[in-house]
Length: 255
Image (tube, rainbow, N blue to C red; front, side):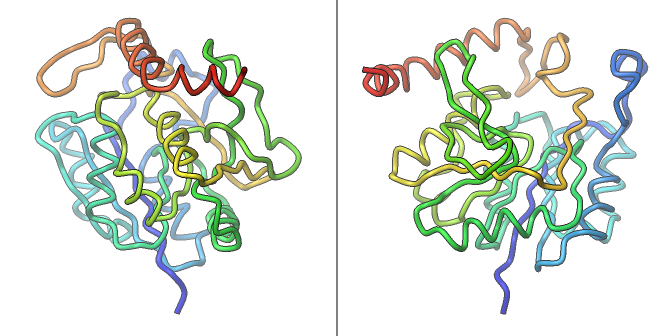
């Protein structure tokens, strides 16, 4: 019997506001409904879709999550708990041997999930794979790798990636110190590698990211867990957390 893949998606909005649409006028307006349809149409391996909703105040979003036959498990939080906690909650609900994390604004075509899972199956020492990633430098200017061939990387980009469940459990999940978001996916790749596993980027996959409203694409304050933080403050805070955790190891590597 084929192993189960758990596809975990945190979601905050369904409808895009006018400012979002004006700012990203030429980007496709994809959302959770499109992703659910993509997965049903294009994923051939056994999978379950686990959705973690961080916004109980958007009725259309909550109703879609509860009524969609393409969503197998879900959790609707009473507040925005942020990305790291949402990813951990999804893992708690998941039963698959592979944990596939996706943004809701990702386009998933035929063979993409299957290829990433196959790379993990064929390599015992590989713990994480994705379509994009690269080297990491302290100033964030690391070279992008895996553009033409499969390559080992320092970090896998967070919009879409797959972890072995056993590796996720060994690592202990995502570090919630980065709540609500930013650096948590880079931190995960570093932790995976700190356990002796490798991270790979696999090119030429049928995966496209259409960012429109995530933290990285907007400058609006972020509300979470009954508090609010500006994007700039969040970036500086999480950059400091990451540096204090990993800079010494980076310096050793460079030396």
